[in-house]
Amino acid sequence: MGGMVAILAAVGMPFWIAAKKLITIPRLGVVEYSPERKAQEKDKITMLTMLLTMTALGGGVVFMGVSGAGGIPPGIVTAFRANALLSFGFTLAIVVAAVGRVTGLKRMYGYAGLIVGSFLLQKVVDIHPRVSFLVPGVLILASGLLVLSRFLQENPILADALSVEEAVDATE
Figure 1 (cartoon, helix red, strand yellow):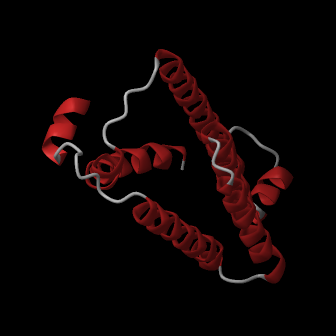
Figure 2 (cartoon, rainbow, N blue to C red):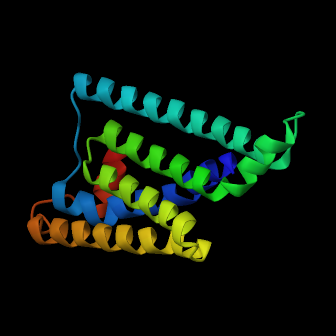
């Protein structure tokens, strides 16, 4: 499961780059950060890398706990198996909250709470596990679309902005 984060990043990066070229650059132009801001961004990337590494290691521990590898006592294996989905939900929420901390986006804390609540509800009420993924996913998607809509309304395309091709050449 830890490797899924890397796969998600690899698949998501082309979409991120395309969105910047089509949405952000025509509205805000190409931003050149100060050396101090570049250092802050580098620190954020380092923190996120450490977080993802810890998440992958935590995923390995949960995998070992669920599979019983490494001579883990049967009682602990049973506990891991009974709460594997809940462990996943808490791990996902920790990652989302940490991303909120690193990026300063307070809504990420709400997303983390929504994820935890959904997975706890699944455990307590015994609803289908897919609902644990679907409900927060739909709400987070709706929130993201709302944020995008506000951004598009508040930031019309700049009349004097570089063309997309010029902006792309300037960023490379």
